[in-house]
Amino acid sequence: TDEELEIAFQNKVDAEQRIEPKDWMPDRYRQTLIRQMSQHAHSEIVGMLPEGNWLTRAPSLKRKAVLMAKIQDEGGHGLYLYSATETLGISRDEMYEQLHSGKAKYSSIFNYPTLTWADVGAIGWLVDGAAITNQIALCRCSYGPYARAMVKICKEESFHQRQGYEIMMTMAQGTAEQREMAQDALNRWWWPSLMMFGPNDTNSPQSAQSMKWKIKRQSNDELRQKFVDATVPQAKFLNLRIPDDDLVWNEERKAHDFGEIDWVEFKNVVKGNGLCNRERLKARVDAHDGGKWVRDAALAYANKQKLRAVD
Ligand code: FAQ
Image (cartoon, rainbow, N blue to C red; front, side, top):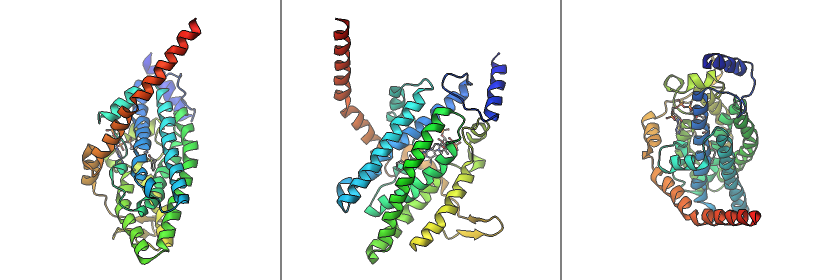
């Protein structure tokens, strides 16, 4: 019966055995993974846009080449994750449709504008830094294709994080004006980066079940804490100030206490009302529509080849 299958499934998960595409799985496990993995894929693809904004204005050829490589990596991660999600029985067209119609979520972080070159540094440092913290945990996710994808993706994100931190370092040690740009970027990206980890554990409807299924291995708040503790010394080294008056080392907890996230802003951005939500979605829809002739041509060519093969 389904109940017995589900017990056997949970035992397998508890024994740290990976679930593979052809294995039996509860439908809700499948749907949860489709939701999280497709949101993750969408985030990678939409995540190309804020940085893409600076490709034509990078301060040197070297910076431009590095940024181009990073953005291409993000595109690769997206495609990789779409493939992994397809193993669960949803088509790529369906996932695109969900993104383009505004039905599917993607990370709130990509709905903020990139105003200066320092933002490219802050994104690599903070956004990729937060992404790695979350994705290291996902390397041990119970679903095989997702966990394996995360291993390669984490390696690339580490390079992204370093290139961002290096930009911040250059600017923080530069002219007074460059320092100010670096500080301003940190001011604007700090809180949105903390929001990437999702709502507090007490407010996270998906967490309990996802933890039980070992899709999530660490809670939203645990990962957020880890990120704060890792990032504070990095900011100190840059001699930049994290914009949080409540940020203080707690000797008892051996961790930093920090201020409250503006959850009203978080909800607003997730709902579609952030500074750039409409612009981001429009860029994706336009790119998809603009690429229609390529897909049509590729399909026509494939059909022609098929007909030739029959002859
Ligand atoms: N933005 O119950 P929970 C990258 C949603 S890294 C938007 O806690 P869950 C690399 C959540 O989906 C960024 N929505 O949910 C890069 C859920 O929605 P529902 C991508 C958010 O799933 C760097 C609802 O709120 N990384 O792209 C956010 O257990 C630089 C309730 O929340 C991933 O996607 C948010 N910040 O935990 C690229 C990692 N937070 O139920 C370019 C994989 C929560 O309505 C440049 N995902 N929501 O569908 C996860 O680990 C989890 O899904 C969480 C949320 C931790 C994000």
